[in-house]
Amino acid sequence: MPLLRHPVPLHRRKAEGASLNIGKKHQGPPRVFPGPPEKKPSEARSSGGILIVAPSWIGDTLMMQPLLMRLKAREPDAAIHVLAPAWSAPLLARMPEVAAVIENPFAHGQFDWAGRKALGKRLASADFHQAYVLPNSWKSALVPFFAKIPKRTGYTGEARYLLLNDRHRLDEAALPRLVDRYAALAGPLDGATPNPRLTSTPEQQRAVRAALGLSVDAAPIVFCPGAEYGPAKRWPARHFAELARKVSRRGTPSTPVWAIGSAKDANIGAEIERLSDGAAQNLCGRTDLEQAIDLIAGARAVVSNDSGLMHVAAALDRPLAAIYGSSSPGYTPPLSPRATIISLGLACSPCFKRECPLGHLNCLNQLQPEHVLAMLDHA
Image 1: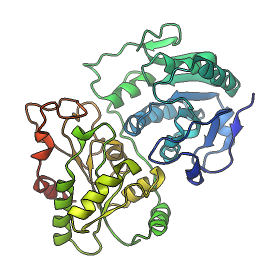
Image 2 (image 1 turned 45 degrees about the vertical axis):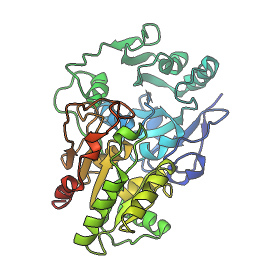
Image 3 (image 1 turned 30 degrees about the vertical axis):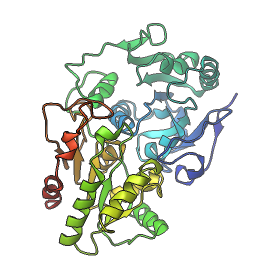
C-alpha cells in the first residue's frame, strides 16, 4: 500500500491535531506531513532515507534534534523522516533536518501488535536504510522491525535483542543528559553536543500576533505556567502574578506579560491574570503549538516551569528563567547559554514526584518572585 501523502503545508494543518494537546487518533494509512518548504522531493531517494522513532514529549523531542544534526552532517543527502504523534508535526517542521513527519497513530502506552505490524509493512516500501528507535520500550521497535529496515539502532532497553540489530549499551554515568544519550546513537561524541535550534521568521511572528489581536511591536515577557507532569513542577500562580505586577510597574506599555500554554493551563492562566489585576494577559488555550513557538520566538524574555515550552524557549535562544522544583536540570536542562536555572536546591529536592510527598512544596512556594526578577532585569 503506498504512503498517503498530504500536499498541505504543516502550518495549515491545525485542524488535524497540531495543537498543544495530542490530536485524535487517525484511522487508515500513515499520514506523511511534508517538512519545511525549502526541502526538495528528490532528497527523499538520493541515498535512501532514515527513519526516526521519536519520543512522545515536547522536551524529549527537542532533545532528539542534535542526533538529527549529526546524522545530517554525516549523510547530507539522506532524507530524515520522523515517526511521531501528529501533535508534534508543527514542532518538527521547525527543524531544518526533518524532511517529513509520519504520524504515529498509537497512543502513549498502547501496544496494538496488529496495528504496528500493519504500519511497518506499509513503510517497507519507503526505502529506509536505517532506523533509530529513541524510546526504550519494546513496542517502540516493532514498526522498524516489521518494515524490514536493514539497520535498526537504539539502546537495548527492554531486552530488544531481536528487534534491534545495532544495539547500544547505555552508560548512564558517562552520559547523564538525555540529549547526549540520543546524540551518541550516531557514534561516539567527539566534542560538545550541539544545542537544539528551532526556526521562526519575523513574518511568522507577526502573523500569530495579528491572528490573536496582539501588538506586533511589543517586546513581551512570556510566562509558561504549565507543566504536564504535575503540580510539583508548577511555580504557584500567585508568584507568577506578583512577578507580572512587578514587571508592569517597572516596564512600559511595549513590555506586556503574556501567559501561554495549552487548554489544560487555561485555569492557571486565568488565575494569574486575576491575581495580577490584569498585569498578565492569559493566552493559555488560545494558541496551538505552532503559534506558541512564534510567540516565544518574539519574547524579550521567558519565565517557565520545567516543561516542554521551556525547552522550546531554549531552542529559540530566548533569555530564559527556568524554574525547577521537584525535578533536576541534570537530565534534561534547558540547552541554551541564555538560560538561567532558578532553584532553591533544598535537601528534599529533586524528588521527581508529581505532587510534593511532604505536603509543603517548599521548593517552589519559597522561591520568591524577586529571584526571577533579578534575571529579567538583565534580559
